[in-house]
Length: 202
Image (cartoon, rainbow, N blue to C red):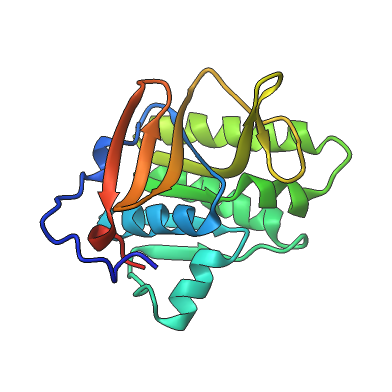
């Protein structure tokens, strides 16, 4: 999708310099393929263990097809309604004992798979618990959300329209497709950077 572009003269920023270790990194997007490109670059750069909860299976599809090379430090989880609790417990335990990168991809899928009466409270509780644990081990937590901005309501999940879960301890990162790669908008800092097409593994 990206890597066929000839942008060899451009240097890509290191995503570890974009992400926060003390905040939840909320990655917002409207195009799932742009999100997959961003996360594939992130995972390719990380040296610590990556605990990847893949709820939309897009990234897993790229790995299964060989488009993205599987990495020794990557653990991919494919939860079902029956296994989600055990998988979340495993992720929490691992994140509490060593520095890791936790990827929840995506929050929309987490809403769908939990499917409880008070699902909003359940999802918020999981995020807060993960954030508190990862802060202790100086780990990174990245949570992707397909979302759109509505003037009256702010960020809402797409296409469900559910209210976007916001915490004071979050850093919003908006992804957009640009002519030369992925535009990364750091919403709180009013800054932008470009991930050149040639730097993205897919």
